[in-house]
Image (cartoon, rainbow, N blue to C red; front, side, top):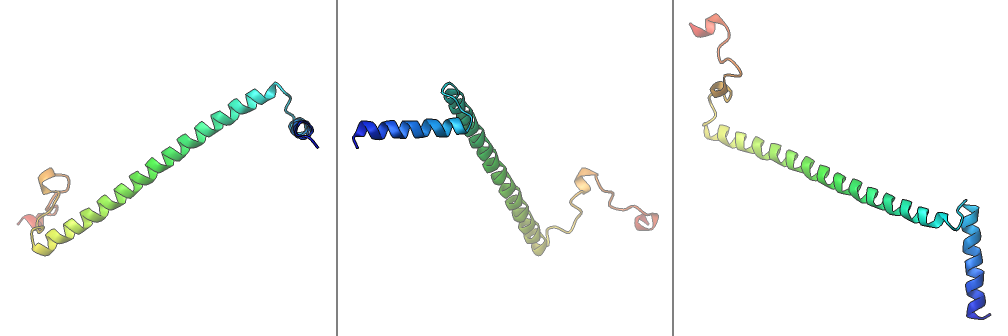
Length: 100
C-alpha cells in the first residue's frame, strides 16, 4: 500500500464516521465553532469555581483567625465588656432589676 492509498482509506473512513454522526462537509466548520464556544464556556466555569473556592477558604480562615483573636483577648482579660456596647446594637441591661 502506498501512502496515497492509506490517506484515501483514512479520509473515506473519517468521512463515513462524520456522516454516521449526522455531520456533512459544511457542518464541520459549525461543529468546530461550537466546540470552541464550549471550551471557552468550560474555562470560564472553571475560573468561577476557582474564585468561589478561594472566597470560601478566605472566609473560613478569617473566621478561625477572629476566633483565635477573641480567645486570646479573653485569655488576657481584655474582653470583659460587651463588644456591642459601643455600637448600641444590644442593650447591656434590659430589666429594671439590673439597673438598680
